Amino acid sequence: MGERAKKERLIAVKLDEETLAQRNVEQEHERIAAISDILADNRFSVCGYDNGPYILCVGIVETKLYFAVYNDAKHPIITHHLSLTPFRRVLRDYTLLCDSYEKAIKSGSIARLEAIDMGRRGLHNEAAEILLGRLKGKFELDFDTARRLFTLVFALYWKGDDV
Image 1 (cartoon, rainbow, N blue to C red):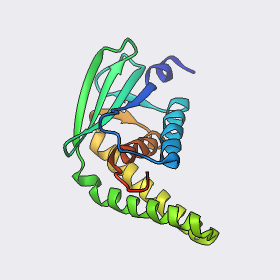
Image 2 (cartoon, rainbow, N blue to C red; image 1 turned 90 degrees about the vertical axis):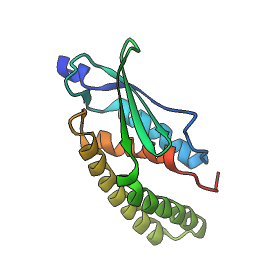
Image 3 (cartoon, rainbow, N blue to C red; image 1 turned 90 degrees about the horizontal axis):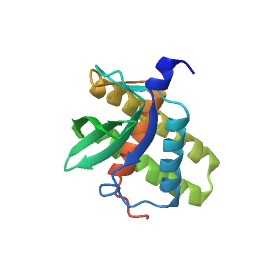
């Protein structure tokens, strides 16, 4: 790994436990997997700051998503707040698809599961594009990192009944 790649990456990702929605076993597994995938392979840097690697804390305060970034010595660098409004439709649709997915698992319909999973992937991609656009000029990250971060945003947002 080159020197630049060592600096332009996340070495830890945490979710604000106070804002983390209750979750079931599958959601917890997805959250853990998303963090593990991010840490295994990501590109992330703070625009105008050349002293990574970084630690990221993600949370929701009222109707705003926040990204608090620290250096590897745990000193704060920046906290950036985003309105959840641009994500509202995709979060709502993703919630519906996740609920449908759980129902399809119980029914055992493989074809339905595959169709729902394709829809989830499409919404995930759309959300990653929104996230990349909203973070432009603040953070530099690759598409795969944005997709995985959306999984974490959804974990913070989702308030389902099946927990």
